[in-house]
Each structure stands twice: as C-alpha cells, then as structure tokens.
Length: 68
View 1 (cartoon, one colour):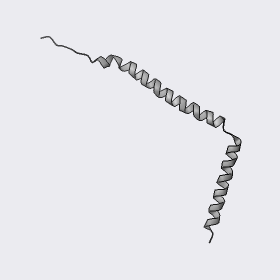
View 2 (cartoon, helix red, strand yellow):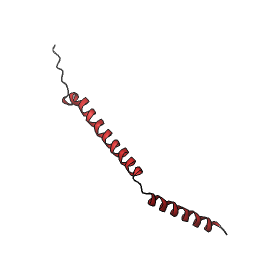
View 3 (cartoon, helix red, strand yellow):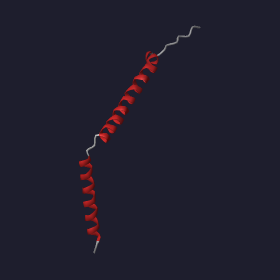
View 4 (cartoon, rainbow, N blue to C red):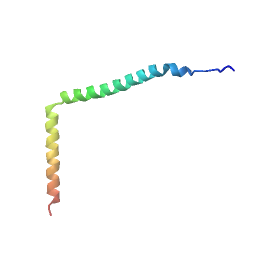
C-alpha cells in the first residue's frame, strides 16, 4: 500500500515567522528602553524642583491635619 504524506504549507514558514515576530518584539522593547533613557537624560531640573516643592507642601499639609 502506498501512504500519502501531506505537509502543511505553513510548516515551511514557521522559522521565518518566528524570526519576524522576534524582530517586532525586540523593536518594541528597544523603542521603549531608548525613549525611557531619552526622557531621563533630557529631564529639566526646574521640573524636578517643582515636583519636590509640591511633595513637601503635601506632606506638611498632611502633618498639620493629623494634629488634634
């Protein structure tokens, strides 16, 4: 008897599709990491000072509201 073997058409593309998928995952993470580093390096010092002033004002108001 003769056996008929059929191969799926997508099977030959499996490694290619895997490489394309890994490329897009690496591209996504590299954009995320590079943009994070960019925003950290280019942060303004005046913005940082304003944040610390706001945090100090909030913490003082909380301490004042605790007293009886």
